[in-house]
Each structure stands twice: as structure tokens, then as C-alpha cells.
Length: 401
Image (cartoon, rainbow, N blue to C red; front, side, top):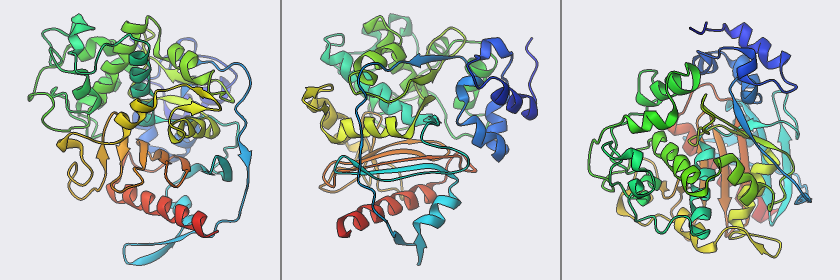
């Protein structure tokens, strides 16, 4: 039986093993998520060193770096919110921002780091990783490994027959409408918390086996409900059809051809399977390069890395249950293939992660914004909407500057 580490012990491990040790070498890592949620100092450090706490797989870069040109300009950004005027500087402070990188027309116009971070720091993605996982599904389709997303997931993963995923179309899983019985509210007793505890902290069960254990709640494709386990099944699908770990496939198909600046990491369970629903650790600049790939319709220089058709399919909601303004009461966003989408002609879209991680892309305004954070709570719907108000104010300032 593994012993639970204290906050101080885990914090010490982060510092002592920051040169390359892995969780298998440093011992147990139970209770880490609970500590992250309650200890701000620990959270700030852990979010730059998650691969020192949990096992991981390296997403390797190679070849020439895709250099990001700089065109820094002063940005005085204010916006109206909740009946008053807010400043971007105050927003950065209140949301415990650790990096904010802004790209306009392919050039970095602003790049700032906070709370001890710098341009070499890696930042946990949390659920921003979901958008990477769905991209791998699109690449597997382009490679002829998946015939159609209308095919049932069990055509490729027969192990899921008899589970809640039996016969569920891949498309419904991409759109978070699988119908599987799985709760996610970050309350500590929900299914996401149970999956994390059992598979990532206690090593009692593999992520794949956890997905196999779930039952059906409702018919697939009828109702959106945010289920991280859906993304985990997509990661399993990628692993099965490509014969590669998601991290290795991402390295070969995106990280290397896109010219990423640094190696990244992807946390795994004890069996070595990536936590496909979360937990990529990368630099802000490399997250920005991923956003640029989508802004540029899948191209880098003269090379088409990702099919343009997939980008449109992945970021513009089609089904009624994932349309902007209809998805979540009081929230204007929609959802498609693991991307959040905005209403309007610019078709802006964003990857989001708990504790307020963002990769925001507006292909019409040619803006990419990366924000990493160590926010005080898992999520706050009002702060999410304020975040996008701040991003829109940044876009307006860039247009007028």
C-alpha cells in the first residue's frame, strides 16, 4: 500500500527532482489534486512540474524551430464588465495568470510571465489537451486509420462492447454526447474525481479499464454533457488505430513538423497510457504554435500538416445540442470536436482547461492568445465569460493600435 505524501513532501519532490526524476522513482503521489485545489503556493509550482509528480511520456521535438517573429507593441487594454471598467492588468492578477502570450498576424505582440515563470517554463494544459487529442483523431482519419467518425467506437475498440460505449458513434464522443453515465463537477465525489484518484493517484485501475466499467445513461448524440472520459476513449482509439502512443503520434505528426521549440510531456497512468483528457505540459510559445496551426488552416509555411476540412469540422458546431447559445444556459459558447466555439462570423474558438488555461484562436482577426493560470478554484463560469471579454478587448486594442 502506498503512503500518502504531505503537501510539503510533494513540494520538496518538485524541487529535488526537477532535473528529470519520474514518479515511479520518487514514490507515491496520492492526494496531489486535492492539495493543488487547496494550496496556492503548491499549485503554482506543481503546474510547472506535473511531470515530476506523475509518470509521463515525452513529446519530442526535432528539426528546425518554427521561429515566431516579434512585433511588440504597448497595449492599454480596458473593458466593461459587470457594470464597471476593468483593466487587463487587474484581470491578470486576479486570475493568477502565469503566462499571457498574444499573437497578431503571426507575430508575437505581447509576451509576459508571472509568479516565477519565464519563457522556458512548461505549463500544464489541463483540458486544453482535449483539443490536442481530437486533432490526433483528425490526423488518424487523414492517414486512413479511421474510416469515418460515424462508425461506432466498438468497431475499433471491441473491448468496449457491453459497456456504455457499445455502439456509440465516434462523432458523439467527439461532441461530448456519448450518453455514458459519468458525472463531472469537480466536487471530489464525482466520477471524474474517482477516475483521477483510482487511475492517476492510487494506481488501482487503468484508464482504459475505467472506461470499460461505465454504463449507459441516455441515448448517444442527443445531449451534450462534458465528460472527460469521452476524451480518454478517443486517446485509446488513437493508440489502437495508429499503433503509437498518443504522445509519440503527436510528436511525429505535429510537434516535429510544426517546429516546436521544446520537448513537452504528457502524463500517463501506471500502465503508460496517456491521460488523453488532460495533462500535456508545454511552453506558452509551443501552445501558441498549435493555435497558429489552426489559425492558418492546418498549414505551416508551405506544408499542410492537418487537413483544412478537419479544422472546419472540429471548430464550427453543427449539431443542435452543441450550437453556441444553446449549449449551456447563460453561456454563449458552443462545442464541437473538443473545441469551444463562439457565435458570429469570425468563428473564433478556444481550448479550455480547469484552473483557467486557454488557447484562443480568432482566424478572422488573426489573433492567438495563450493564457496559463494557477487560479484559486477549478472553474468559475462568470470568470470564464470575463476572460473572453478581456480577450475581445485585446482584439479591439490590436485593431486600433
